[in-house]
Length: 108
Length: 118
Image (cartoon, rainbow over all chains, first blue to last red; front, top):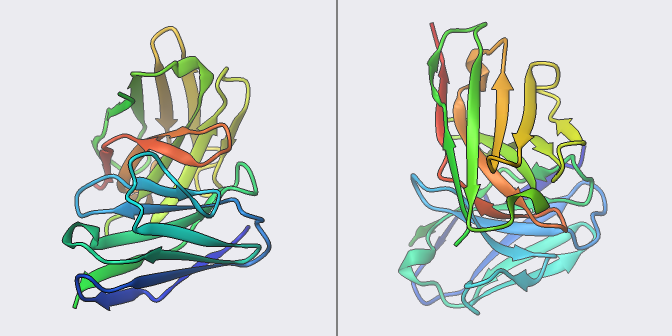
């Protein structure tokens, strides 16, 4: 099983600042990584797929990068609606999908 | 627009069974694989099962293998998961998810809550 490890567990950032979330895979997954955002009481929402492609309707302040085992989600200028939980997921080892444990992005 | 609506959740005793349904609309349902992903209270996301677009391929996570059965009826645009021998650690919100052809999850339902408790 591919283990996805996210860091940090919690990230405190002020509105308008930049946030950088990391995700590491226990083995190479090429670029088959997706990022999801989840707000309290809601279902997750796809933000990024193929490590760096924004999903439909996702603002340009969200960007993804990485390949192999190291991946990053960057939010360039945090808005109030961006706070919540973020999960990375690998889909390289179909159908044995695995998620990271999540990063909580909170207001500083 | 793409919509996935889960139903069938509830409170069930350990060892009993429950069937969840997922109804899709706003897209060509029979062209897509559908997955179930669950989230235990206060925990992260866990992939549970997937069924291919035509129902011929089915795969399960290790924690539910042998206890859960996924199926679909494309004439009704619906996917099911029959859950048996339920355990307290199956307690979770269960999400129905559309899988893009490249295998990421591009649409999620709102979830249905399953509580396994005596």
